[in-house]
Length: 399
Ligand SMILES: Cc1cc2nc3c(=O)[nH]c(=O)nc-3n(C[C@H](O)[C@H](O)[C@H](O)COP(=O)(O)O)c2cc1C
Ligand SMILES: [Fe+2]
Ligand SMILES: [Fe+2]
Image (cartoon, rainbow, N blue to C red; front, side, top):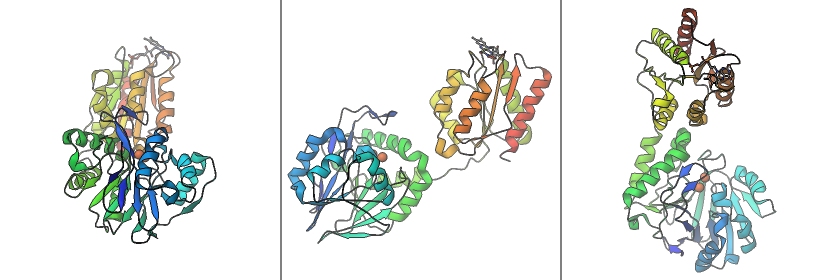
């Protein structure tokens, strides 16, 4: 690991973590990651992003290649997730003259992350910091991907410090995109990063990109993965962010019915619900999915892309069955708010599945249709009519 010069006034001093295979509990990181950090040198010196707590020694050595840390005047944090703020407590000791600059929201979070006093000043949207010979412009852009986020732009060097935006979990000692040997691997990591981190925040990505459109940046310094340049991956990255962040409206209404069924009772309810849906919206895309016979990733994509859905489980041992919980674990909570959902299931004596599933989808802030549908053992003709009516209610909720 070493410091790298990006432009005459911008240096990369972050650390590589090539062996990481899981990030933030759930993200697979096949190509490792990096916790990028940058120094901007004017008459005064600023450090942008503070790296992960676990790599202190390497990080300090990289900083020392560029400057004596005691000379750092500002530590700028575009976002305070601990992969970028974890090293802050150590940095504050290393840079006694430094003032931490971040959004007001970010400084509020840092109080409970650092748990020690430090010098700080909130920055406002549009504020400019003059380092002497080089300036930094701050653009507050919340929910990319926390409420605290902002961009920092250096007009003299045409460099945008974008934090997690445009980042990738891709570790490479060669910091510039043009030196990345496995471009396919990089692009796979870049897409995985976008889907996991920014997929739930598409409208905020669009808003953020509109805010930075006024800056003629030629280099992007993200907080993970290679530095992006106009002759390297930057045009691809910008084009993909625009493409992936568009909100797609389903041409025909998508109302999938997911269920599990040990003896076919809940399955019968599922078919009747689908019939009811199609009576109200004849051209609705209303497939029934027996959860254990279908691909979980595909069903998770389907439930997140649907306009409304139905979820059914029999009660086994006082609860809904694990595959149904597994499917619900893939629901994108941020974008599923207010989405209508019908909950149904057959039971024998206690019938906890439906109320337990209702509690879960209510916790996701989805809109439960009616009070759920519970049927004791094998559905009668009347039960199937009630299920059809429940399907009609579900379809009517989005009509
Ligand atoms: C292993 C097993 C455990 C069960 N445990 C419960 C239970 O705790 N409470 C309940 O109300 N019904 C329980 N039942 C009964 C089922 O909910 C009932 O048979 C239901 O009709 C099954 O619907 P399905 O055909 O859609 O699987 C259990 C059934 C099985 C096979
Ligand atoms: Fe983050
Ligand atoms: Fe990050």
